[in-house]
Length: 131
Image (cartoon, rainbow, N blue to C red):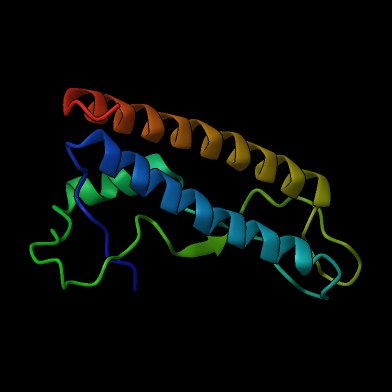
């Protein structure tokens, strides 16, 4: 069961959630690639980050009101990738070229989110006088 967090007003927290989601997606995609020859294996992917945030907002989400509360993920439940069109004779639906593109997209999004996180942290350090 995945518990979602409300959308944070803090850009650092939002970038952190995005980085966490991207890390989970890389794991799911790596698992797809590792099972490219497994008979009957269906590729999986995470719910898109924007949809996961939208769901957290619509449901109100669960707020972390105490630092001892468990930290959960945003949209961390892998689901069967319905975009998989081709199947091999053994029933495997993993297309390595599609998985490689998704890995590259995820890597680019990770670099962007990490850059934003670093920029915001730098702005906070500058504002506090700690270059």
